[in-house]
Image (cartoon, rainbow, N blue to C red; front, side, top):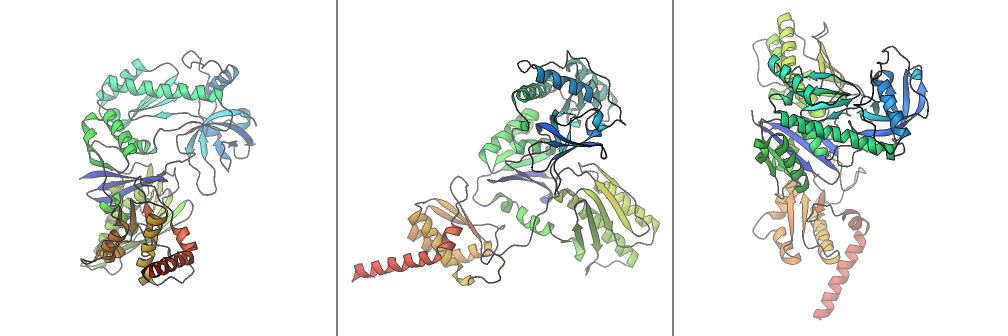
Length: 543
């Protein structure tokens, strides 16, 4: 199977698409300036204790108070609280966990009011990002995640990933980490650490320890609420979890991000450094790899898959319902039971893909086509478990109920990825009346003239719908050629599948969007008057 990553970096966000045999199976979008992301550390203040919920609401600077449950304090909360008290008491010296005596664990059945009080300052980590009307969910079990391990202060345990099957390798890693790990820290060894040398593991451990020490030092200098620690690069943090040595290519369309990712891959897998490639074509990177088309066909309420069958997906805040329909299948089976099994098995493949693609979490209820035979229901259940095996999110699948429903729970950390596939009209903005389509090319010429003659921008890329681009460039004496002769050859007109039919956008040479829409739309009459005045002046000169 050919696996590739495609990274699209825009001004606002980073989109990372995972392709398997050129088929989109995972899509992640991260804001370049995201706040309250999973893993970020904040210095926060307890605002309100809620004994009925056995939790506290904490001010981290978000518009909604964050939620901290007693069970998210961690068993080592007493050691954690003692360390913070010492750190705040003497802000000129960073206390050492190795020299601190670890306190007994707090009871699992304890109460929040026995350990927290309003106004208390805490160093908290985002466990779940803000979702819908809810603020972030927090934890005081601090952890720093690397490629090979997770470092956790206030403990002394070493855990090894269960996915490492070799007993000898587990023993080796446990002894190795035990010899280099400082006292007072727990370490979770990740699957990617298998067969790694001590130098590589020690180097990452020292980096994670440095992150912890710098975070504590910054905390001592800060006032709550304040961001204390975040990943250096959103792209690198996403790729750290997605990266696999099996990737054949990683394409990136942004020079700075390309360098960051290449340096990271060179650090963790030097032999794969060359698979990171800088994409420099004018065509949008997602269009070039046919990702835009797949996104528009894969998101939305109705999703078609093989032989005319389709899914209907409805979502609420924490519940998703998927209905499987056979539709007008062109491939007929000998009988209804066989037909139902065939559709259900193919639907299971698409459902597993949709869960990863949309990052759907919470409870998922699937209404499969009814099957009469118990062995067929078991076959479908086994197949669903098999196709979900590659899903990195924690999940649980129950067998079909007597009503033919399958229940799935899937880890929910971030909001579900919801992409609207319907395009809003760029001309009327939903009012129902649009300008004459035949005049759209005149409007484009106005924009080019405004950019070249008034803004003095000579080099830029204008992106338009592929159908319009084909019309503009058709023939030997095309409109595109006419515009080039009239306004210079510094600009390009390029097709972009993500745009609506009468939509356009303009980017400068650095990839920043030039906003000329409102200027032209608001002053359309002024533009016409300028053209009329220009024509009158030309006529007067000739006379």
